[in-house]
Image (tube, rainbow, N blue to C red; front, side, top):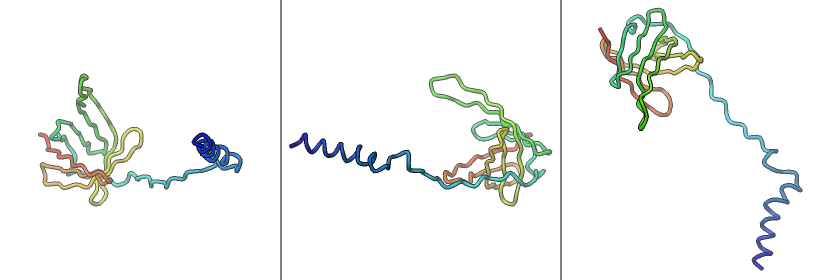
Length: 135
């Protein structure tokens, strides 16, 4: 009896969909397109200069709209990795945008008081980066 039940389950789960012409290759999963973030705006000279984050990353926001980011990434159990990134930055309204060399754009809301710049990510996972102006 148990063998017959198992055979029936096996038949209904594998052969029936094949005979009916419906299997997983016939199903097209369409995911909604995430709109690409457009890099637009212009450098705002009040942000130009050298900045250091509370985690010791160093940003240099050039007046021309280019930036560099130097940081040391600590990996548990391994040597730290030194990273050097370059790209473009711009301000549009109440957002600051960064575009890396690969064309990826990140957007942040900001709070600015002259010597301290707080960036808050605008995606679903909120994170804050606090930057202090360097002399």
